[in-house]
View (tube, rainbow over the protein chains, first blue to last red):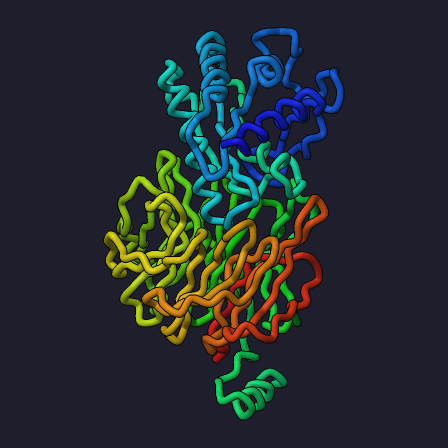
Length: 175
Length: 292
């Protein structure tokens, strides 16, 4: 319990210090843009003007595109539920978008189990968004297990950021 | 030819049948930790004669051989979602199998007669084990549990399947009939147990164990007794059995941003731990049967 509290504190401190770096590797894995965008404040990624409340950039940076999880857990934290409520509100107001929810795990586990754990996390987010009124046909899920960490150090500070579910928006209701 | 001579020498020295005339399918890795490129590759068990079977444009992992070594199964994100591919080794032709719309399929293994593939299927966040009859295409659900069931492996006589499940709250190893069912738990110590693999001699189950921040490759008898840990490191996982059932190969990964994976082998006595030379980083090895 105190470890979780320490982790949350660390996340908060690091969150303030870290730059906003959208992870873009797409549903196809290694193809596509190698995450080159997002280095500065200028929109080079096609995500729109972050000051425009109907843009994807606004969703990612202001609403919050991700929630984090405790080790081996897929239950939503109170903070996570708050972020997802805001996501649901945004999605309910901006109905022209679909989303793929990516579930991830940290490296403290075996490959297949982490793939399944990532799927559980993505499903937890999906179920919550649906419970807040988002139409199910706008949402899909995918898991990357431990294959696509956001942070590469082998310490809890990085692990905590990797245990995430990211809501990735795309224009148009999902196929 | 040299490998067959090695097998004979090995047999004279150890009394065990050799394994030098065998191949290993694995994942060749490159690139940074947060954007790894992974491609299916095949080599002789000593690292020689590497060939690449996929081009790395899509994330692939965990390739496995068929019982006669002529086909492999692997999981790939090529279509955007983890799907199981069946590839003929000689022709390199491949096809997706077991596809279910909107669901991930992964962790496939062949039955000993090569006619069935057992694998994990994820639906609505829940992962269970299914089997697919390759001839008829018939899909059968083998486990039905709100927990994660994955990493299935057949016994060499085809009658049972060992797998991992976190139904107790933590990953543990279970054995069930090949027709499916609840399963009986066989792992018992502290820590998490995963990636169970049944020895080709039927006498041991190898596994990955995590305990107190360390990973271990271990073996246990098929009833869970005589558990022995053979290795310890920051991250060891995914053992595969040599055809003689006396040597294991596995992935070892080093820590940190510059960490890389490599292939290692160890005897079931815990001795002769050594790295398998590969051109670059490598993971997810799977041993072939002895070549005919």
